[in-house]
Length: 322
Ligand SMILES: [Zn+2]
Image 1 (cartoon, helix red, strand yellow):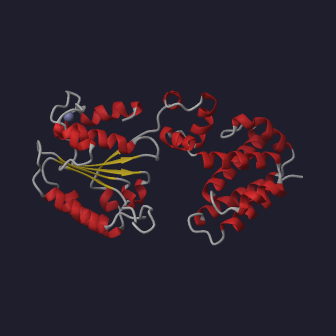
Image 2: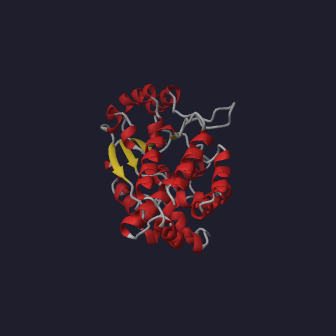
Image 3: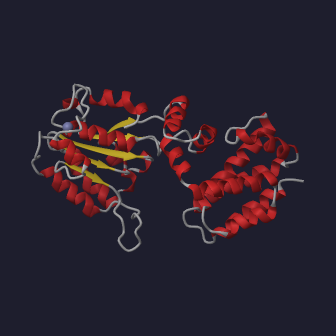
């Protein structure tokens, strides 16, 4: 449970008996929505929680909860495919059927039955439909918490049956303090937080991903140095397509805004490079490449040929400068 979600938690848990039966926690990834949902669930299932509904951490309920064996709690996530070892793209109807059965049973402890679905936009259509009846006629003392990074992707029938609660991105100073407290070097926190769109957990994950951060440095050095061979080298590996797209897009954004307003937003530590490049860039070409990247965003998850796609971006990029 993260400090910036504390106030929201208190508001939601003030009168547990008045909690709605279904809550949709929405907000960008990496701001602790799932931790908030789990914390609320543990607080409700704890047999010795305090006046604010904070779990004691010692009772049988807490013990079961932390061991993920609490009989009155379910966490529904996309299953891991045993063959590939990867998470399946969807939450399947079978998982929802089990959940419906779970809610139909009588609770073992104190009466609450709680389930968290994360992320809810991964429910496939059949699974979402399978959930409707439970959302419509929930058994007493049941709570279903849906977590969503993209609530608009949920069917309106599901959304409308939930109480929507927006979880916000923490203030910048709060996020920076938290990252420093989690051993991220001060010199890197601001850049990581920018790249993560202000989401602290996402920034922390970026910091832990060394392959990605090495790749990012290589990419930025090649973009700043306008080195075609280094750029084509980056394009040759088909990995990091989505990331490369993101870095180039933000780099272009900063170049264009450097030209138009003299400001940069994402790469302030590389202001000198951006100023130097902006002075010799062709604005129309930069804008054309930006439009191309926007349109290519749609095919990133299933590109026909990732290296060719990246090569095209980089060739256009080098052409922007005289
Ligand atoms: Zn407890």
